[in-house]
Amino acid sequence: MDLDQLAALRTPEGEAALVAAAELTDGDPLVAAATLRAAGIPAGLAAAALTQAELRRRAIGKFGPDAAGMYFTRAGLEQATRGRVARRRAARLRDAGVHTMVDLGCGLGADAIAAARSGIRVYGVEADPVTAAMAAANARATGVADRFTVIPGDATRFDVTQVDGHPVDAVFCDPARRRAGTGRRIFDPAAYSPPWDFLLGLAERVPRTVFKVAPGIDHAVLPADAEAEWVSVGGDLVEATVWCGPLAAVPRRATLLGGPVAHQLTGTGVGRPPVGPVRRYLYDPDGAVVRAHLVAEFAATVDGSLADQEIAYVYADTPTPTPYARCLEVVEVLPFSLKRLRALLRDRGVGRLEILKRGSALEPERLRRDLRLSGPESASLVLTRVADAPTALLCRPVR
Ligand SMILES: C[S@@+](CC[C@H](N)C(=O)[O-])C[C@H]1O[C@@H](n2cnc3c(N)ncnc32)[C@H](O)[C@@H]1O
Image (cartoon, rainbow, N blue to C red; front, side, top):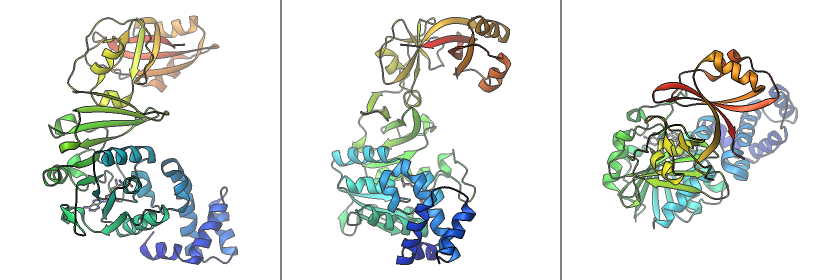
C-alpha cells in the first residue's frame, strides 16, 4: 500500500469500497474482487479495500472492535502490541504520573492509542510514511486525535526533551525487530531499529524511559538499575519491557495476563532454587516466570525444588493452586529408553499423549511416531534431565 492508495481508501468512494469489502467475508479472493468490480469499484481500489478488510478481520484479536475502522499494513499489524498488554503498560505510565510522552517508532499506534486513552498526551514519531499516515488515521478512528499526534520522521533525530513547547516526561520505544523486506525476526538488539545503543542513551536524556524488547533478550545486556518485565498472555510469552529510572520498581517481574485478573511475580532474577529428587508433583512454570529468572521465587511459593540446577521444572510434595505454573502429578519416573517407554505406555493403554520437554534434545513428534501409541487412555509425558541423566516422567493432570 502506498500513500495514494491510502488516500483513495479514505475518500467517500474508498469508504464505500471498504464497507462492501467487509461484507464479503468468505470465499475466493478472485470472486470477491470481481464482485466489487461488478459494483463499479475500480480494480485498484477494490484490491486495496479487500486487503484492508482482511487485515481488519485479523486485527480483531489485538485491537478488538476498534479494528473495524482502523488502517493496517501487514507488517505493522504483526508488530503491534496486543490491546491488553498496551492498556496495562499505559495504566502503569499514567499511575507513575506521566502526562506527556513521546513514542519513538509508534507504528500503527497500538501503544500510543492505549496511552492516549489513559489520559496521556502522546507524540508518536514514525519513519515509514504510510505507517505514519495510518497511525494518524487510527488516532482519528479511535477518537484520540486530540491526544495522539503523529510526527513523520526519524526517531533518532527527534528532540525527546520537549515537544510543542511541552516538557516530555516519558519516552517509550518499541523498536522494529523484523527485517524490512523479508520480515525475518532480528535477535541481535544492536540490529533493532532504532538500535540498542540509542535505546540505552535515551534513558540518560529522559529518566522515565520505557522500551519493549524481544522476550528472548539476554539479561546480561539489560541496564543494571532497570526493571525488566516479561509478559505472557494466556500462557504465551509475548514481550519484555524495560522500565528505566524512577519507573523501575523491582529488578525482575513476570506478569501473566489472560485471565480476569493480572498476576505478578517479582524478585531479583538471581536466586537459586534448592535442588533435590523428583517429588510427587511437577510444576511447569509460565514462560514469563522462566524468562524473568524468577523460578527460585516461584519455587518458594510452592515449597518446591528443582531436580536439575539448570532445568526449570519445579517439584513439590503437594499440589498448591498457583497461577504461575501448570501442575502435574508424577506417576512414573524412568531413565529415558524408547523400548521401556513404549512398553509402559502400551501396558497403561495410552493412546493420546501430550509431550512436554525441558533439557531434552528429543523431537516430540518423532518420538510420538516411534512410540506407536494405541489405547483409550491419555497421559502427559515430560522429557527432561534429572541429576544430568535423560529422564522420562509419566504424569497426569492434577484434579
Ligand atoms: C515494532 S513497531 C512499533 C509498534 C507499535 N508499538 C504498536 O504497538 O503499534 C516499530 C516501528 O518503528 C518504526 N521505526 C523503526 N526505526 C525508526 C526510526 N529510526 N525512526 C522512526 N521510526 C522508526 C518502524 O517503521 C515501525 O513502524
